[in-house]
Image (cartoon, rainbow, N blue to C red):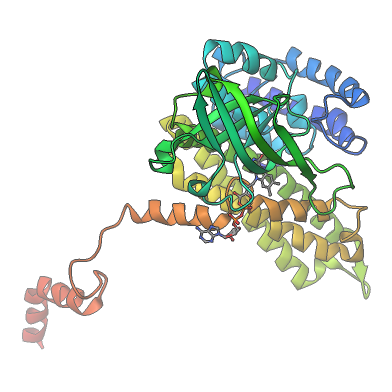
Length: 432
Ligand SMILES: Cc1cc2nc3c(=O)[nH]c(=O)nc-3n(C[C@H](O)[C@H](O)[C@H](O)COP(=O)(O)OP(=O)(O)OC[C@H]3O[C@@H](n4cnc5c(N)ncnc54)[C@H](O)[C@@H]3O)c2cc1C
């Protein structure tokens, strides 16, 4: 088991309970039901509800929420450790009321929503009675939101929305969408885009298709390719102020990325555990795989990556608690976003290799993890964009040298050092 920063025995007891509960009660759902979001699936909901009740009784429901919203108000560090346990099962976030994209959507509704919006959408979302969708990416390019074209035009007391959105996850199950659109094409996208809350049954929304990820069973795709055609919503469906979409999107993504990363950490350690078990169980030419140096290298490299990843994650969570300001940890969060995909990929790839042919089958969870590692490098923005953010943030702490040669150029430094010790060097020469 991994080490923990936590010394609070009460919290540690909660963590231990969560670890056991997820393993024994929740994870089996992963093997029986397709998705935790399909509220129309009666068998799934009947299996899920008693688990959600137990979580509530334990005081852990909506554990990402502050006390003002009915959550336990854990800081990010405690949440990170908890998410590491929840990451062991696809159904666990839903059992604990912390699933994406609802968790991020509830954060922005709480932050920017009016009292009416909170009563209509936030409360049932927090109660786990409805699910939501975040509809931002467009088919012609997601990495650059300034290129988005879906537009809303004001018509009296209503806005009329037209355009297409791509990869709106869970659109098919959602009761409402939070959709990012252009409201003023005359100004920069940073001032000209707004967020709307759109009930899923609003006239004019068509699902062109539900896109599935490679390897998912046919017909189960849940990433909506949506067309909004003259979709009318009342003016009070605007979330936050007009032109505030970028600020809202940033509020949404900061915490979400670190929670996602910590849940992924659970999958990294699962793949690592599998690798180690295999190394000690399988023999070739009379030798255990684990006694071969190339296997040992895989284990050592994986352990180092995994522990570095976990440390940077926990340090970032600790910094957020300390500063209570996501802007101060922008580079740390960008780094985490990149590492999430990279570390999962590397460790899973090595684990697959050690499992041989069995590793690539659907009889082990490793290929699913490899697919997840691939999309994690894209969802919430591609790794390249986060590396750019990271590098820019780092460079802010540096200045250009004011001379032709770098400040670490040795000849002038040596000259200065010699000048500093000139009196001693002269003495030495004089003594000879
Ligand atoms: C599983 C999954 C779930 C998702 N869920 C949602 C959701 O719920 N809601 C939503 O709105 N969107 C969602 N997305 C979409 C996601 O946000 C986009 O895929 C992402 O922003 C990238 O956009 P794109 O796919 O259009 O790729 P593009 O923008 O076409 O980029 C393609 C590639 O170009 C390169 N690239 C792009 N920009 C740069 C740059 N500045 N420098 C260097 N290289 C660059 C990168 O290699 C990048 O991967 C989801 C995606 C996935 C895979």
